[in-house]
Length: 173
Image (cartoon, rainbow, N blue to C red; front, side, top):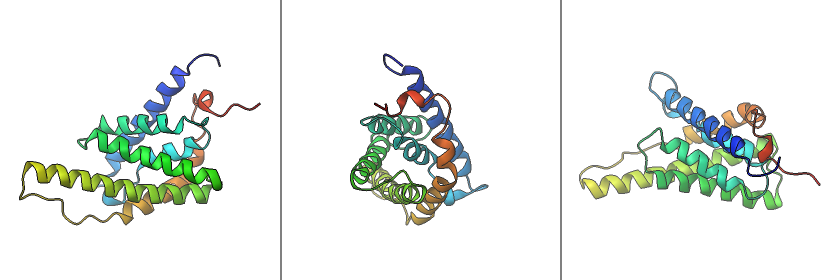
């Protein structure tokens, strides 16, 4: 495909938006609550291994903006968290094969743990600046990390083969 793959990026953003919306539904107390996986991160990790070099950061920004459009978390913290996960995946990809299911699930789980910690810290800082007497209580991060790793094992093969994303893939010589 010649030129910029605008349609493919639009589809990736829409898939990320739908994943984040589904995650919001699953995070309600009536469904999975704190055990709801970070489906945007699962999508990003599944597709980043197949994307051309340098496109993982763009995918992280797209997922961060998709999640920011559906929630009240600070957009800068959301994008920074996904960019950090993208950087971790890129660094691990240099020496390891992170495209395998177990390695991808471990990467998604560890990334979810650190991203959630960053978001809790950002939310605590925002609350502390607005009202000194309000703070975020103790938050357990391991259910999110474990649920994201399990969702990555189950959903990554499907996420990586979503229609319309082939132009974002690696070009073979």
